[in-house]
Amino acid sequence: MKIEPLAIPDVKLLTPRVFGDDRGFFLETYNSRVFAEAGLPTEWRQDNHSRSARGVLRGLHYQLTDPQGKLVRVTRGRVFDVAVDIRRASPSFGQWVGAELSDENQAMLFIPPGFAHGFLVLSEVADFCYKCTTLWHQQSDRSLRWSDPAIGIDWPLDGLTPQLAGKDAAAPLLADAEVFA
Image (cartoon, rainbow, N blue to C red; front, top):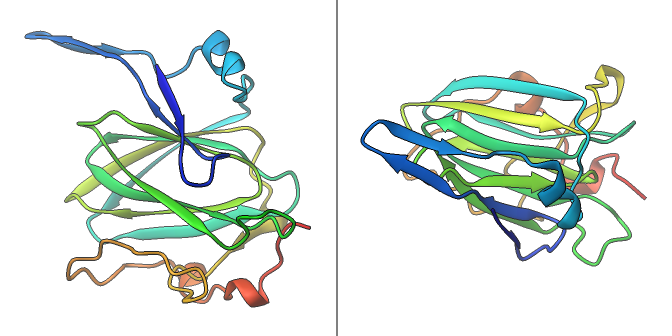
């Protein structure tokens, strides 16, 4: 598995080796030894799977109490996945990185605790799967505004009007949000 840091080095792009032939393919999505050697989590507390239609934008989500690290991937379709550093003491506070994840490139993204996370569905439908280092904590669940100009995410909308959940549409700007010290 190839593991490389993105522009914010704490966020990692993982590209597994895919073994394929006329019968299909095989790939390894997690290996505790490989992850430990790369300094990535080796214990996961929750697995999630969502399905969304083209133009759905989920995020930017995080939780203040027991923040989650996430290992995200797409098993069907294509998304633009984004991580925003919301650790106030970090030199990359307020900066974002993004990557296209799809069932074709089989890439995965590791987003460490202290980051807000979101994605935009680019295909007609996408199945999005992710492992979390901690359990979901409803009371500390938070969102940041996906379109905050101070963050400046370059979403590949290409004429799409994002479909948002109510909490995401009403999410605060980074300047007004509760973030990590």
